[in-house]
Image (cartoon, rainbow, N blue to C red):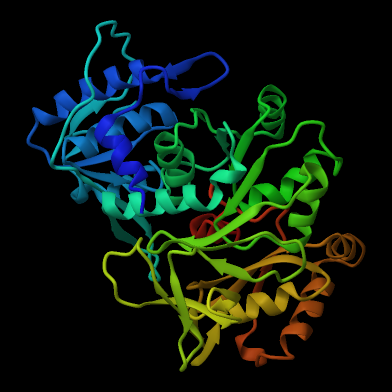
Amino acid sequence: MTKLLKTWLSRGPSSQQLISFNHHDIVNGSAFTAQVAALYNALHALPAKRWLLACNSSDLFAVGLCAGLLAGKELILPSNTQSGTLSELTHEFDGILSDTCLCEGKAFLPLKKELQQAEVSWPQSDNLGQLILFTSGSSGQPKAITKTLDQLDAEVSVLEQTFAAHLPHCSVIATVSHQHIYGLLFKVLWPLAASRPFLSDLVEYPETLTYYTSLFPNLCLISSPAQLSRLPEALEYQPQLRSPSLVFSSGGPLSHKAATDIARCYGMPPIEVFGSTETGGIAYRRQYSENEPWRAFASHQIKQDETDGALLLKSPYLADDNWLKCDDKIAQLNGQEFRLLGRLDRIVKIEEKRICLVQMENLLQSHPLVSKAALLVLEQPRVMLGAAILLSVLGRKMLADEGKLAVNNQLKSHLLTQFERVTLPRRWRYPDQLPTNSQGKLVAQDLLELFHD
């Protein structure tokens, strides 16, 4: 293993390394070092060990990240800075590193641009800190996932070994947040360690993406299935004069249609990365054909559990060398390749009958009226299933021509091929889009709002 990230963090950037950019500003290694050194000194002088790190700008986030790790702190990365999220995490941190004061009663060190002229040295440290990310647990409550620098370094090193040949002198832009493991690794840590500049802003609109692809001959786009599925329409399904050198997608499988549409616009399908906050990246693929298998990273070992088909994983990204049982069911094709067969969890009881929500969602999505389906358990006025359905073009036409009841009945008849009537969804919603976050993940609370009427 090359220890790419740890080597870079121990030395810091060269003075001329281009760290980040946006449409009005660039940050070079010299300026970045000055900012990291100033924040490192401030952190070193404070006893608080656990610091919440949250910032919209990726360059300032990177300053907080490097300074906190070098100062030996625990950095808490919330999935967002909504008041409810911070309230749930308030006992997990003693101080805040942010560009805004997010809550009262905690130590606060602001992340801001410092115009410091004097040459300073990169901080040296023998006591490096670690990160704690929070992801939704199976119960819906935030679940703490600790990531040591050794684990993050292993992943960054493997990413470079696997994909560097596709990224000559590349700049990196992203439509996903650095607050989550995917954006953290692909937008900030990997580019820093490999000396690839990144866009400090989040790309929120197709026009912004087109602006940067026209400026940069080599560009790497970090995105998600939800965003990539909508992009071809914005590009009018036409081949683009200037395209990213590479597109990454993570957060869930990309549909074959979306992969094909992106290939039509950009010349090749995205590289999809399969993994989770707990495991890091597990495997990758490019969908040149439908149901393309996933290939595990060369540093990983995989096998299929004999009892329930679960994916078993050994990886240098994990905290120990034991086999980890994942919640994904697979069909293993050979030593490194497999196909995903759905999740093993999300089992609920409706009318005292056990129902796999993933199985029901997959069945709904096999119907020609349905593009995407999301199920959730509603507690009021009694326990029942709610179905939020993103209709296909055919489904939208039927909804307009025949009404909601006709669509409901079609989908219920389809579900009755595998499920008992008492277990079927009682409430149905047909929004124009399913609510997702910047990672392309469905947002449970926003899904629930669709049923408040």
